[in-house]
Image (cartoon, rainbow, N blue to C red):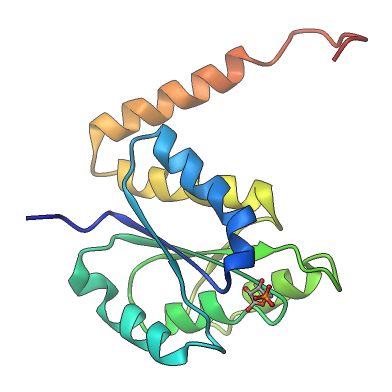
Length: 164
Ligand code: RP5
């Protein structure tokens, strides 16, 4: 029987994948299974309702939601599930993601969305944050996360060079 991945990565549009794939990549590097789906709060509201209301029962543990512009996907998803939702503001063309950021971060008290930075950095950190949440109850994953950080540290040169 196939088990549900721990993490769902949902995004408002195919166009968001260019950003959200960085969350997927870091989860792959940490050997954390994820299910990647296009779910739009505005264009596919029924799909959002079905996913969000069934996410916990389906077996997901953490949801990463990326959207741009009027980025209502993370907040609406969080309103319909008790699972932790991490929001990634995708960089929009018109306002460079500031619209996405404010749409996601300014949640009313009572329904939290853990909001990350705009764009690629936010997507990577959402993946790392999801892994850190899961690592609380998974020592093997915690060890992989430690190793990932150690490898990152080892790649940072002690001094700057003109060639880089
Ligand atoms: C949002 O609208 C999506 O999250 C995406 O960032 C933005 C633009 O979508 P497309 O017009 O590229 O499909 O819902």
